Image 1 (cartoon, rainbow, N blue to C red):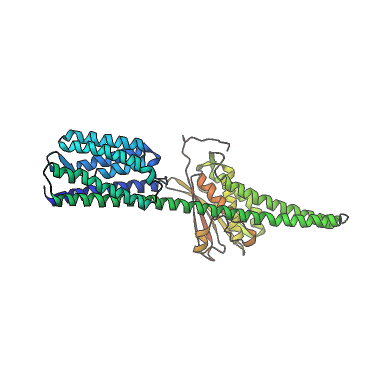
Image 2: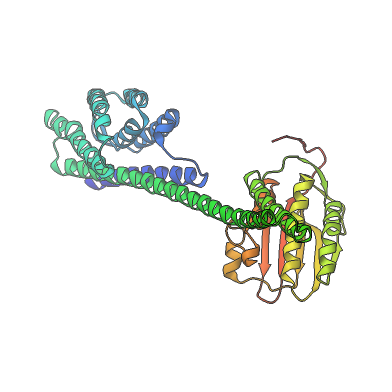
Length: 429
């Protein structure tokens, strides 16, 4: 057996192990799942056993009865992160798949499987408390010791000593163990850091929401408190008190609306799933928004050439449409036309609301929907579009916004067409 063949076989074995580990990690990360091998022992066992079997299939024979590969790496990887049950199963699996090949190498395999199982069993609890780099070094050292007991000592006992072959095997096994464990620990660390970053980002959103809500609710309450104090100072002035009462009531209504917007964000998903006629909901939304449009000198033009339906909550859809249309009206300070159209494309219903208002920059488009971002200055909370995005996503739809400064904005809503036979549910949440 040539040294070149031994080196080539071991490197191919290493390549397969690395590819499988990377593919599995990318798969779980793309699914947004927490990738910890010790979470599901059955998965850990099957993955490690599969890699062991592949390694044995790529093994290189040195002498009769002695074959060498990198099966120890998946055995160690699964045993360390899978728990005691996986460790025992992998040891039994390694012996069972080596048994049909017979030879004195089988005895070495059995002895080393038992010894390594006991060693990992006692080492793992202590190493888990150490930094991950320290664990990698310990596992690498264990792999080097394994190469001595499985190749160096048997080669002396059974007279097939070949120092160069031993150095090749020991070097490849030891460095491969280091690379595999380093890669795996690095992926786990990066993932945990990503989870911490996401958690921190969520906390930031919550803090912004709390600050925004505190600010928006405190202002009208402060106004109401001041007006009540004025009324209490001069209760006989009915005319002035009547005006103050009207303003106080309007401020309370504004505070209530802010709270309702926050509640809509907290419960963004449709409460009902029924057949919703797009044409009817757009017409109703137009009727509600028309008085405001007339007041601003804006014409609302609706063009719906189809009668298709979607699945969702009609009240929530109406809330989305009114919010978007109201934003369009407020963006057209000099009047104009608000166009609402709907059409079918690739078995999806598209609703387009277009205004000829002030438009938005690319930076503003990126931030659209953030809970604390508003283009209305002190008159907006940023909750309206945030709620719109949440409701549309809850109805399995999507939003795409196109806008340029001083050239208007188009908001494109896309929903799946309701097909006959699709189950509809009415759920109180």
